[in-house]
Length: 82
Image (cartoon, rainbow, N blue to C red; front, top):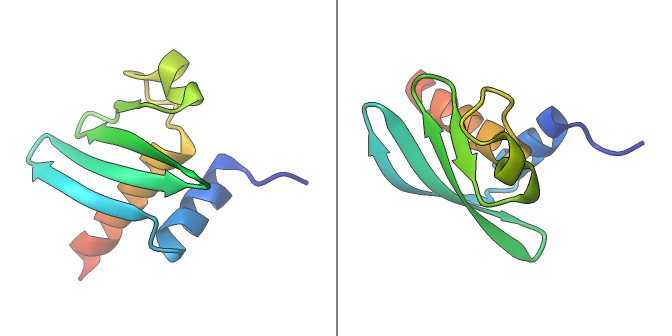
């Protein structure tokens, strides 16, 4: 059975596949390595996102996050807990 987006996002975080590039009060920009590709991902404070992956091309600026955007969100939530 293939990974869900949530499972993939958690795996990407656990593997350290994210590099935080920029954090502002209303968005976070990161690069996410997934397999042999690197995706540029932005997650906005209002819950929307933009990602260069195929899912992001069709769902960007919605709240239906791709695995890469969800991984960025998970990473930033983890950092807030520290």
